Amino acid sequence: MRILCVAEKPSQAKAVAQILSQGSLRTRDGTSRYNKNYDFQYRISGTFVPVTMTSVIGHLTELDFPASCRSWHSCNPVALFTSPVVRAVGEKVKDVAKNITNEARAATHLYIWTDCDREGEGIGGEITSVSRSVNPRLVVRRAHFSSVLAQEIHNAMQNPRDLDMRQVAAVEARTELDLRIGSALTRFQTLRLSSRFTSLNDKLISYGPCQFPTLGFVVDQFLRVESFVPETFWYIYLEHTKDDGRAVFTWKRSKIFDQEACFALYAKCMAAPVARVTSMRSRPKEKWKPLPLTTVDLQKCCSRYLRLAPDLIMSIAEGLYNQGFISYPRTETDQFDPNMDLKGIVAKLVQYAPFSAYASSLVNEDGFKWPRKGKNNDKAHPPIHPVAPANNLSGNPLRVYEFVTRRFLACCSDNAKGQATEIEVLVTDEQFSASGLMILKRNYLDIYPFDRWSESSVPVYRQGDSFEPSVFEMRSGVTTAPKLLTDFDLIDIMDKNGIGTDATHADHIKKIIEREYIFRSPDKFLAPSTLGIGLIEGYDSMGLELSLSKPHLRCEMERELKRICDGAKTKEDVVRESVNLYKAVYMKSVDEVVKLEESLGRCLQQEPDSSVAVWVPSNGSGGSEVCKCSKCSE
Image 1 (cartoon, rainbow, N blue to C red):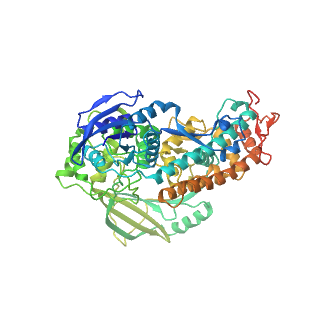
Image 2: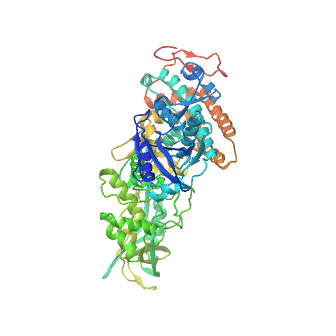
Image 3: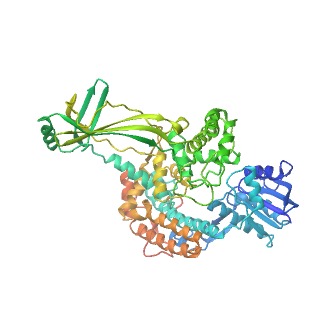
């Protein structure tokens, strides 16, 4: 028996090899300068066997069209929906693949150590394919782990599973669909629009099935802000001052947009301006501690509280995971397994100086409480949590680590406790209320400053008391415009609408910023460019808002990919059905492309050059047109 282990990243391979070998390993160079090979002996079923640990750098193979369709002018873009596709080792990772095949030739078993999510399963499928191309008899197993902790790594090595080929098929289906849909619409947009608008001559106007709905969310909010018209409203303000304090009461109707109607109610109250206390209640109140941390929450919270970009947050989190400081940072699970030793993890954090006293209070003063149970469990990884104290971090990695640690300790604490007072009064027939809060025990708030719970006092009243208000006025206000989206808001909307996954939200936002469809302002708000607005409004004017700029079609595709994972559908069925849907959308886009040009013309303040000749491909379909290249006229 000879085992070849392959991790997803070089740093991960080194960390796992150090644990499995207990530091007794030999490091060899391979054909890739970035991917070292680590040789050591490991005991399997009482016998020491030779093991080699190496790695890839993400995906090993890539999908592309054959040479006959690869050039932008080789075919009508619509042909890309049905063209054959070819999977081959990527040009940039050929030396990595060569290292894998060299090591696989002498192995009897291949252990996949990629990240335990759908994408990691897909990469595992690629490693298997490349390895078996030189050694068809390889026995393939899958190591399952959530953190780079010795106990978990040894358990994964001793109890490997089978590679989930349904997840592999889902990744392959998604890759093929993204290639076909993205390439066809990107070629169409770029060829047509760059020929009609001089400001777009050198620009790649790309389309992505997740990128455009993400852009659509930003554009929709921007247009809501731009079209906002402030409205004046009126309300009744009641304030009462006593020797023991002041109370400001809120009108039950909140506000009215009809001045005369509000004045009529106010005048009725002024006829007998005496407030009578109809209810006085005092009750215990709790502020619930946060749920265990998911990837989406990590990105949302760190973008809001630490002011970091989502892609940077995920890069830092992956680094902390590979260093063995936190658990796997890509998870949808917000509930801890009852068998996890969470109190033991808290005990380890006593060694982390900044939070030592708080962690000690949870362990030694019986302050530990089991975390709340959320509604999501992906059955793959636990919520994100610290696994070891990190006393040598600095900068943004320290800030992200401390956020994860604060969140975990807050989850293991008790809810904040308080006493709430609620008062209701009646002036004629109009109801008003006031409330106060006294915090009795801060509990989790002491370690989690991102939640706020403020005390407020009110005077003492008794039911049946009457008083004349100190201030009783009819006042006016003006509605305020909504704000542009932040990263926090956008990730939240993407998650709720099923656009992308917890692992890809940050990448989609980064991509549309790189394409200059949106930009991030210094105060961290997201706004669309004129190009981004023109594209969304152009497709919306064709009646394609439910297909391209809105999430519905992509969300349905994600559901279909889930059905592959569940075994309800095959990869071939999902690819065929999704291609047919998007092809119909493409054909309508071609037929009504003038509307897209008109929209861009308005936004770019430039008339499209309709004098440019168009090329009608020999395999044209239904009179669709694509413009000549403005540079070479091919």
